[in-house]
Image (tube, rainbow, N blue to C red; front, side, top):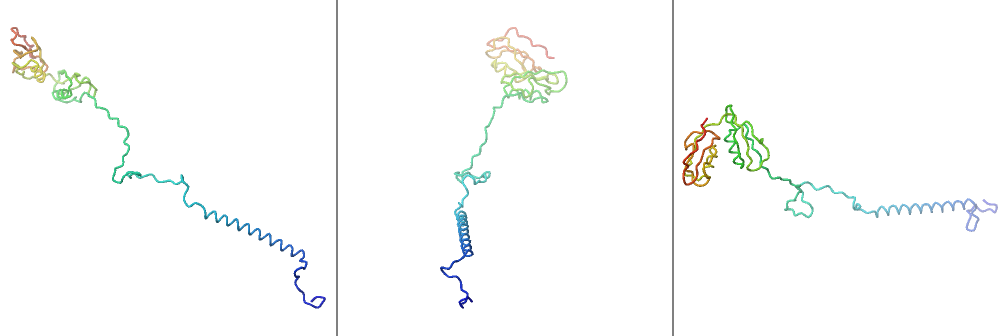
Length: 229
């Protein structure tokens, strides 16, 4: 109750609020401003996350390398993929002395003939027909026509002299070489063979020489051949 007999009442409009009311109003206003600022900041952050790009940045994405044998992009599915093969350094095989050491000398000679190489047989004093060494050595690069020396373990074997009468002089010389003998010419090397020494069918040895008389007339003084050892 007041002094006038009415109950206590709240201050109305136009009443003086006093210092306490003023402080309450100022504090509430500041709080509202802070809430507004925080709300705006949170909304900006949320808006930024919602507007962020969903695709990765170009240049950052990596792709695994294509598997071996898989066709590259742009290659038809049925077309085999070309692969680098590198630089080929294929060199032409040169002519070399064949490996004939330890083989029969006739077989070794044939291998040299097949390679268009010459040969020279040097017979020894031991036993056997095998080649002991060669000069140049096996595997040595050589040119066609090079003479290869073959050292044979044993002495020169015996053989029969072919009959060359009436053959062309050049052909007769080839036959002698094929048989293991060597020609020696008494006259010109042209025309048919009119005489030979030793005669056809005689016994000689490898590397022996056979004297040939070639031309229209036989020589009147045939050269005698060296005795057979």
